[in-house]
Amino acid sequence: MNVLKQAIREKGTVLSSGVLKVDQFLNHQVDTTLMSQIGEEFARLFQDQQVTKVITIESSGIAPSFMCAHVLEVPLIFARKKKSVTMNQDNVYSSKVYSFTKKEYSEVTVSKDLIQQGDRVLLVDDFLANGEAASGLAKIVEQAGATVVGIGIVIEKSFQDGRAKLEQAGIRVESLARIASLENETVEFLDEVVTNNK
Amino acid sequence: MNVLKQAIREKGTVLSSGVLKVDQFLNHQVDTTLMSQIGEEFARLFQDQQVTKVITIESSGIAPSFMCAHVLEVPLIFARKKKSVTMNQDNVYSSKVYSFTKKEYSEVTVSKDLIQQGDRVLLVDDFLANGEAASGLAKIVEQAGATVVGIGIVIEKSFQDGRAKLEQAGIRVESLARIASLENETVEFLDEVVTNNK
Image 1 (cartoon, one colour):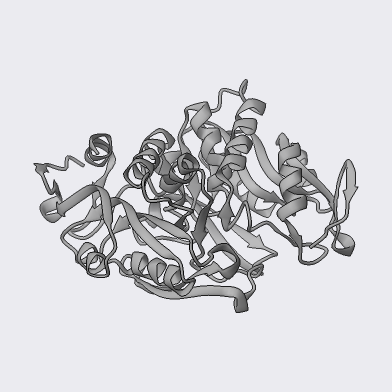
Image 2: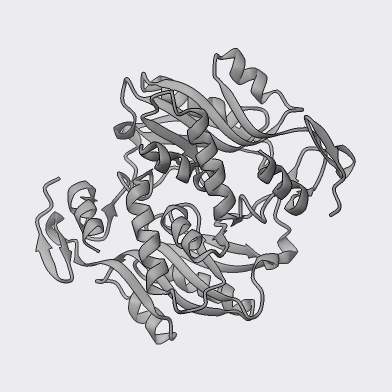
């Protein structure tokens, strides 16, 4: 998706060989026009999949998935990363997820009231790296007896093994930008090399 | 806003005299159609205010503010509740906020790169109760030398003092649903009384 690659080039910052900072348009400040285009693209890619629910993880997944659910005319669910006082703990599906960025485990939970057997669920997330978060979401959908029709990813770190793990589990992965490398403070997409000027 | 009141009546659950659960359409599962209408209404209410940024707090503020920023054609910023590894801690505005629901303090932060002196900021949040979160956001905007043009609230607990606090600070408050009481498992709006059938 060229408009996304352009935003990564112009507004992203390579912090290390594993970390790309995109808080100018994705996960702190949000470019709602770009996020709407992203959501519409996910909706287009999975339009034939009879999606009944879109599930993402708070917080950074909400903006890029909002328009996807809106266009598909299905509810959006954001899994919680931390247990909430207003959530009945006997009534949740949960999965433990390790964040290499934050260096901590979190419990990702979805209320049992929100996923039914027979649901066809499209997962959406901002980043795919090692696949921890995506696998956690997929496990939650399986616990509910529902089907994962695929996952829409905004930015894939293709030098990590997340895609391989998900595809081995039979999950279709659609990433709008695939990064081959972040070495030498440079964003290299799978199909081109661009020098990072930040 | 009648469509919002209807959602609260039909899908909200009164958990106690202080807590209304709205995770069927607002803060766990998201009704993107309703959230779009809410965002458009905030945009309409503040359309003459030359808004340059919309600021909310993760996670539940993102969905109702998304379309507001999109319609106003300005960036959306979601303040972080917890410090992140990718955020430079020397370069943030921050404010301590107490959550009575979660019974804990959190540090709400916004990168200094994202708010400039002269910005005219519209704040948006899902709930207004004691005004802790809203006041914290307003303090962050003030730290940046920017102006708060007002705050858009989805659901106001009018039996708490948040609105009074904000108005005393000179902040215009626009709430789309104002709840007079949650006593006796009943949602009483400021202008009507409805029995909760959950």
